Amino acid sequence: MFGGVSLLVLGIMTAGVCWRCLGEPPKNVQEVKGNGFHLPPVRDMWEQAPENTLESLRHAIGFHDGIEFDLRLTSDGEVIIHHDADVSVPKSMLTSSKPWVEHYTLDELTSFGFCSFRSLLEDTTVREQWRDHGKMGCVELKRPHPKSDSGGGYFGFSSHKKHITTLINAADALLNEFEIPNQNTVYYAFHKGMKSSIESASTQRPWAELLPYIPPFGTTQTKRLRALPHFLTHSFSRLVNHHRSSGASMIPAAIEYFVPPINKLPLGKKVGLVGKSALNLQAAQGGFPVYVWPTKPDVEHRLQAAGLTGLTDYADPNLTWLPSGHARWTRPATLPLDEEQRTLLENATKANHLDILKELNANVVPWMECDASSRASLMAMWSKRWQWQSLPSSIGLPNDHAEGSSPPWQAVRLIGHRGSGKTPRPVLQNHHSM
Image (tube, rainbow, N blue to C red; front, side, top):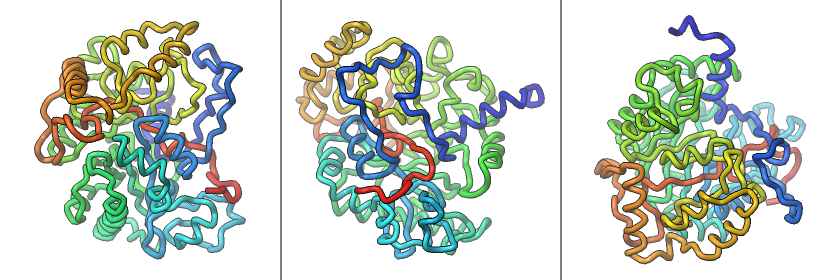
């Protein structure tokens, strides 16, 4: 079977598997052509802030059900929000011959314009949305390049484990200081020892692994090649079983598991978003939370309808009509629609969808303000639609959310990837005002 797959298909497939972690810039919404995107001329054009900056994260946490971002340790043991192993500024701005983030102090990195984790939590908008409004924080923990002073070398597993454990404890201390609820956060990483690091840390927060595993070094092509065998040999069902048995709280998964033609490649039963493959998905998932990346606008509606949470790079408020022919709803968990409201949204047309969105935004009650009866009704509707099962006791999260501001753990969400979406390299062309 493997030998019969063309190199072109393999190239497309592996590009997708690793798309999220390789730092390739997404298309700006305004640059995407076609009738799928409705940008009414009467509204102001939105300008996307650089990824992982405070401006980007602040916008996304209000616009979506939560945010995803990346954490690294600085040379002085502080926590910075930064994706790439190298400091993502023009090389002429670097003050060291070593380009890696972990070689710089917090003050040096914030002077470039990067956001510290503390600064994010000190922001009133972010803190209140995350703590009080039930928004989710998906925290990707980043290992340093193995050649860096704190990288531990290519085979230093114990050093890698210790580094991630230290990062978890540093992040946890800040989250606890600012009273962010455990159920509003999940840690994950491309780290083979994630379970061991979690057990060594003092955290009680949910966690998961990012698979296929991709090491923090190598070229784009070599990273893709490393991901390929795991993707081909691990069906979605096998991915679910791995996470459940390890005690993980959710399943991060690549979009390639769910959309053709690439979802036909992994061994085992095929899953998808429509038809028989969607039934296979529901049976394998069992209501266990699955967070999917990348979720582009053309697949967003189908993904959510199938009971999956999407990580999106599209936070443009002018994007109100999806390529699939549906009005867009960007907070399905924290601004939940009842059955009647959902039917109204589903039946919207391109001509009337702005009026319908305006009506819904005025009348839908946020989850945090729903009474116990409304919450029970919403959970019953979701549970029936997506065949929820009881959460494993090992993940330490409640099945019943009749109280508190957080939607149920299994709820379908839309999460802003790196805040308002990935942006081109270098992330900061010059000093970016925080």
